[in-house]
Length: 98
Image 1 (cartoon, helix red, strand yellow):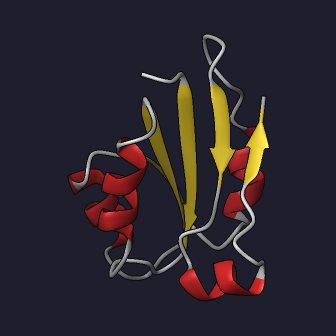
Image 2: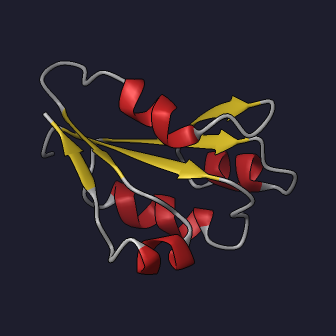
C-alpha cells in the first residue's frame, strides 16, 4: 500500500459514510472515522464498512481530533470531510499532514 491513513470526521452521515469509507480504503492502509456525536447510525455504518471509529459523546469538533492523530510508522495522514455540502463550501480542500 501507500502508507496513508485517511481521517473522516463525521456528524450524522449515515447515508454517505459507508461509501466514503469504502472509497478511502481503496487508496489508504487505514481509515479512521471520527463520529462527532452523531444521533443517527453513522458509527454502525462506518464500522460495517471497515473503518476504525472514534466516537465523541457530543459534538466536540472531529476535525481537531483528526489533526491530533499522529501518523504511525511513517504514514501520511489525510484529514477530509464527509459532508458533501461542506466540501463544496470549502472548494473540496483536503488537509495533508506528513
